[in-house]
Image (cartoon, rainbow over all chains, first blue to last red):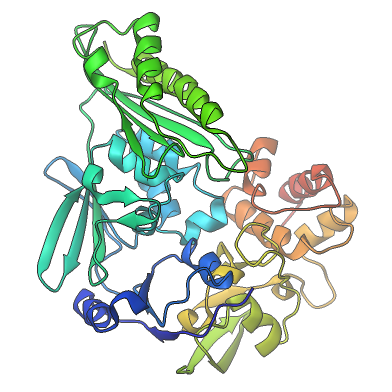
Amino acid sequence: MKPAPFDYVDPRTVDEALDHLSRHGDEAKVLAGGQSLAPMLNFRLARPAVLVDINRVAGLDGVTESSGALRVGALVRQRQLERTLDRRFPLLTAGLGLVGHTAIRVRGTVGGSIAHADPAAELPALLACYDGVVVTRGRRGERSIAAAEFFLGPLMTALAADELLVETRWPVPTPGTGWGLHEVARRHGDFALVGAAALVTLSDGKVARARVAVFGCGATPTLAAVEAALAGCAPTTALIDEAARTAASALDPPADLHASVEYRRRVARTLMVRALSDAVGRAAP
Amino acid sequence: MTSRTVRLTVNGRTYTRTVEPRTTLADFLRDDLDLTGTHVGCEHGVCGACTVLLDGQPVRSCLLFAIQLDGTVLTTVEGLADGERLHPIQEAFREHHGLQCGFCTPGLLLTAKALLEENPAPTDREIREAIAGNLCRCTGYHFIVDAIRAAARGPQR
């Protein structure tokens, strides 16, 4: 339960960090909050030759807003964001409260959780639900990658080994957008067995936009195909049930020690119904 | 691997030590500074026994590396009592039987301290939420909640 030996560098600028990453390639791991990486090091599931600690890199810890999106620097701690978000982001605030425990969120970063890409984690699914964007920097410049294209598999992302996640962008939902978030976990603070996050915008009582992201139910956070079933319709209980049933049958959840495929699919369906119903209930008509 | 010298403040005292990169803060406190009050349980951030305060905020010392912490200010359980006089939170744990074997106690005390500094009058629900990341296998938590509630109501912290 002790990490294998590694070298350690703590650059002060993004460019210095990128130098280290391009020099060491796959042998390097970026250390931000370390709340996922350090356990993997302690278990020796990860044995990088070099840790590139970005905690002292200047300019990555800001939360700003521009072009209708909240821009969250890679080093913004989960706890910090949880306590500074305003009422336009109730879904994100609620989701942050489900990440680990306070002591984990004090140190854990928003960017780190996204880059780690655990399929059962809340933040990757929330970024997908918000239709957010990951901003990366590499030696070849900056890239903006939509959440839907960023997550490729369990712990796998579109981030290249010599790139650094520098920011996540969270579009401000249209005023009146409702939200819902439900997860089933063995214990509060654990990774979810299954979870569902929903954002619903209504217009004249009909669904203008509905996004549901499911987590713990596949290799990546999954955008459930509910919008086509709901768009333009009055969101009745029957319609929500039907949309969730159809979306759940398209999911490809894993089976493991904790839950079977059928159980996860069944729970996903129920949680999608609850998250959508909450979102409709909270949306301005 | 390249060792490095770090200088940090623990419980008001400044220490300068040379550490190798892979030394966790928990092991650094126990092995390099002989501050063995910080307990090491799961070593992957689940049990909360190793919780210390970093610049006033609760963190898992098993998930940080000492080499990262040059220039920081830490509080461990050894920093709570004033000489022979227990900290009011420690006093409350004793009074309310908030410990039996004592293994989880250092982490719980510091978690409680951080909670009460931020929220001097927590509800029971808030107390339970705050200590949800600290596992105790003896008390069943009720006495710990009693102790933190009592500490919050006490004359001083």
